[in-house]
Length: 385
Image (tube, rainbow, N blue to C red):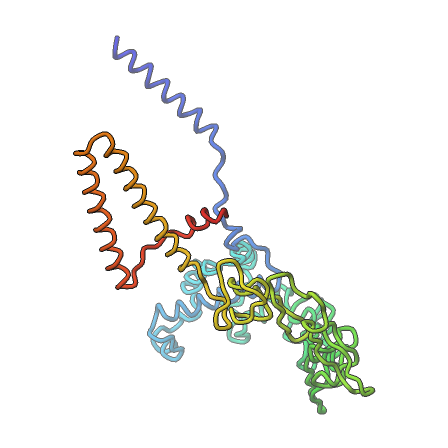
């Protein structure tokens, strides 16, 4: 009977496990999209990645077969291995495995280009050793030589070293110049707004940024704030006619109540900053306890500085509390004395001993500058804060 019950339980558990596996959510992706393996690269970039992986395989097989990758040694000792099918197979086995970004696309392209790679390996690598030029530019036609662009690999515009050709090296783009910051014009031979011409000769131009005092929409004629065509916010034109330039405005003097209460103003180039006063101050004109308009609660003006007096008040509070405690003990002793002289004597002796020991300990602590302290939160409670 027990054996039958065990069989029933075992079958029930097995059926439950089957149902549980059927209801489990499918496994999440391995994270290839996160680490870049499934990233879609532009056609030319993808082909370049494939070529770089192939060339890495060539170098790897050189290291595997002889020390240092010496081509002359390889020709002399290994004979036809340099262009052998065995070596090609070894390269293809690891092709794209070293790629982290666009790995899936690289594998697909390698599979589609397998015949072209074999054709180059066996027939064309001696006459055309540049695999990128043979594969990406000549066969797949997804790239162009450097400084060329578009479907027909037309020459790029001359950007005079101050920009990049749009579509350079690819079958896309329009070949026009994408100028570097500070440069403008079709050939990047002019200075952009907010830049001035610092140097120019027959082949090169150098553009430098205008001073911060110059308004963004007007630019400048040269370096420094005196060359601004108009002044930016936070600067004012200097009187004296054209060419007077721009001068920083001291907002701390010009503006009334530039900062909030318990802050002080610091002038910056073209702006200002509000900083918090020292905690000992109730309003201030600068940083530090010596520049307070008045002292905050718990501080007193001494020798031109707002000084913390909470320690002194704490000591006064301790002394007052101690004496009140002594008084309470004495009163309690007197009350007990009315009912029992003997008990009152014992209590009085204990009180006297307690007072003597306490005062002796306090005297010793004072000599060592170790006065008993009361936590700040208790002081604040006594003040009603």
